[in-house]
Length: 192
Image (cartoon, rainbow, N blue to C red; front, side):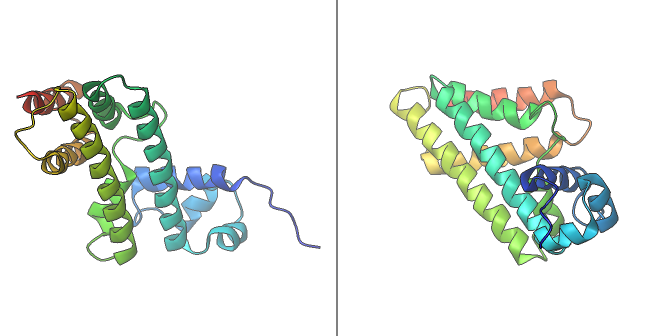
């Protein structure tokens, strides 16, 4: 008779995701993953495959969780400006219990140039983010909150670049006040 799993897959995947987020792919060893996830090495391999497969699953899990959090915050927003402010604040402050920065951005910087699967996942996530921003900008343009001088898609590309920069700077010693000033200027550019 086969043994039943003694762990919840999403729970241990979240632990792996966090470790990869904090340390990156290369710096994270299988031994650290086993210890951090609290499961046996054999269970890790049987459930998630090798380290690279686990990492790709952690990227997917991260994308799902962040996408859900952003979509929820945007849905609760009463205006397009409020929706963008929510996104920018989330990029700077994140969740209370999350590492600084962004697993997707970190992974793109660390691996995308030499790992096509990581590049594909990061590019897909970035495209989804730009689409979300485009929808918010179009909303703001329809309501007269944002300038219609510029194309919504181009503004979304610009704001996504700000978003990525915020996620990178959030991992440094840059003050949150500085990051909020950057978002304030970006919002002002939309209102012109």
